[in-house]
Amino acid sequence: MPLTYGEYLKVPELLSLQNPLSGGRDHDEMLFIVIHQVYELWFRQQIHELGFLQSSLESGHDVDALRTLKRKLTILKTMVGQIDVLETMTPVHFLGFRGLLQNSSGFQSAQFREYEMMLGSRRRGVLSHYPEGSPERTRLETLWPRRTVWQSFLVWLRGKGHQVPQECLQTPMHALPEPNDAVQSTLLELYREHPSERAVCEMLVDLDEGLQEWRYRHVKMVERTIGFKQGTGGSPGVAYLRETLFRPLFPDLWAIRTQL
View 1: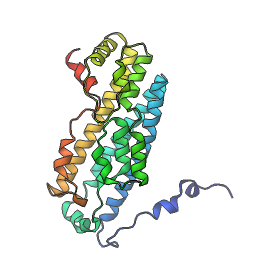
View 2: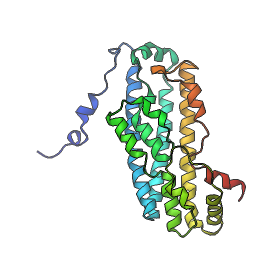
View 3: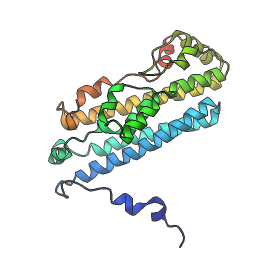
């Protein structure tokens, strides 16, 4: 028999994965499950695209890097738009099934942590959400010594003949990158003298800004739904999420704006 749409996409299996714990008593629980499952699918795609972006940058394939960045930005807009859908659920309706979630929390999303780590946000504390030896923790630990997206970008800069301090490439990233004066000097020269290469930089700024927008909308959605209550699973909720706002992933690309 020829391959069908449902077989190729595993539609029956996919549609069997939405199982509201309320047994259908709370109508909005289905929306909550579907939205978060879709987010996990988007995280999977974003991780897939980040890997290709890094290899494109490190091999100097500008066209592929720009195309991938454009796709990532389009996906981010879709992810932000999903928050509009989730906000059609009122706090009263969420509270109807919130207790059923027990210790589960978005803080436990291993794919989101993987996405963060590839982008450069690496904090040992996040590993505590996953038992030692678990597939999730093992996967995250394998990312620790690998280059971040920022370091792949610096490899791209060097490949274009620009000066990049060696320590910026050799130093393992265990947190967001710190501003670097030498890198900023290189970026200033690139912005002024190399407009075609500047396009890649601006797309990275778009990515950084898009992630900050998604974080902001996510924080406001959580605040709108549960206020300043503790999050499910004992997570700190809005108080912690607010701390993550306005932390640029690529601070050097922002710092040079003042100097241009």
